[in-house]
Image: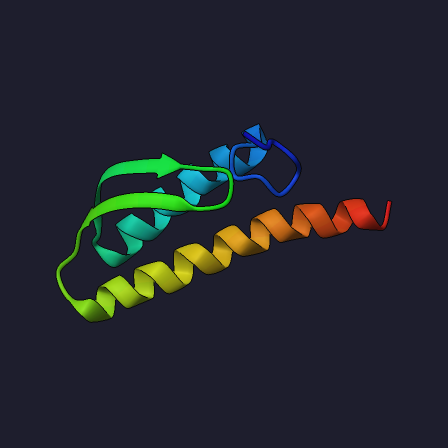
Length: 79
């Protein structure tokens, strides 16, 4: 398993992803039953109430995860 700066399994990224998912789930009324974090993707088992909330949850969570992971990587490129 790759554990570079952009890997979801890097300790800082994994912890941030777990917090982002929990926050987004609470915000959009989504229940996360199971989650598996791989190097570059996630597996989620969710309970959602409607498609609109699901779309909002996915949009918010993926945007925040990408921003976190890529901001860390882009900062390293210029140091």
